[in-house]
Image 1 (cartoon, rainbow, N blue to C red):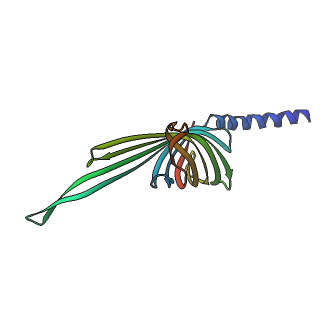
Image 2: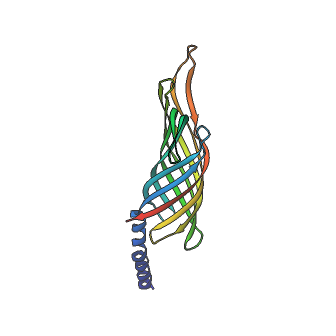
Image 3: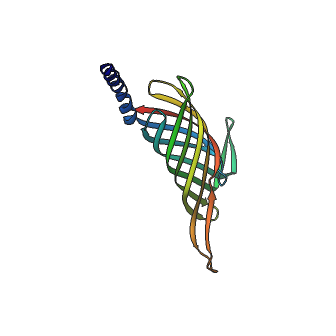
Length: 214
């Protein structure tokens, strides 16, 4: 009896230990595209990348960065000229230009719940630090301004994952992002602390690819 127990225990350890080691050593690369609608800026697309490791069959730990850019130009037609052959040439002038870039850097924990052999659900939470860079150029007035904001933020997401290949999965999900970045924190003439803020909180949808590397 004792011999049989030893044999079964040895088989169990030898059979599962490579799986546990592989799970601990698996590195995970994530690439994503998101559509988000922040309260303080115009809605738009963001691209992201993350890198981490698979702690076990259900939990991923990762760090990541997103890149969100939104531009606006005020362009007006100032002249038009017709040429022989039916060609019409327009002269346009750019009067105003805005560019906004948002860079969140964050750490995240993802918990996966298997639904069947190819499909699983996930819940993801993360915290990080965010930067907002805003550049304004007014060509008519000859004015140029650069504004930099920063602050803490957190995010929460949930969705589904389906298997693409042996080490790759496709993710689709919803996310909520909360952050308020600020600049020019100082004291007013009355001695009160004052600063300027932009609310980047909002909901969005995301699609991405998760790749396990060993």
